[in-house]
Amino acid sequence: MPETEYRASRVCRTLGNPTAYQVIKSLFERKKAPSELASEIGVSVSTISDVLRNLRNIDVVRYEVRAKDRIYWIKRTEVVHILLALEKFVGTIRAQQW
Image (cartoon, rainbow, N blue to C red; front, top):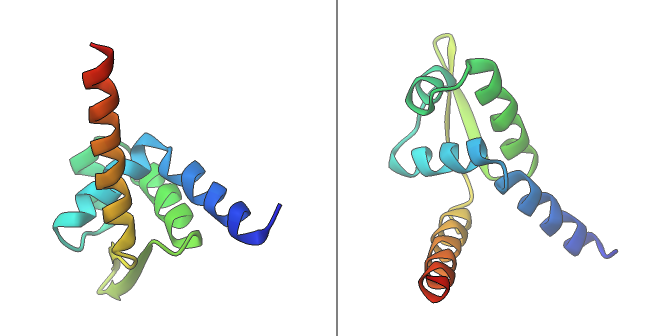
């Protein structure tokens, strides 16, 4: 498998995680700390940290250290367009099925 296809499959796998999807949607709004994301989404900080690590590995988010917290933001805005396109696609599928 060519490297580009392999990397694309990794992105799909990571974005397929519902928690990762929610994290990205939440980071659309503004930069946030893992504890804030965990509280907002309703999962543990440990789970959020794992998801953020995976999102960093595929080069979607970045962070900066402020005091004791890491503050995360979306590095690659293309991911926002991908998610919006997916939601539009799913909406058309649902409209056709029902």
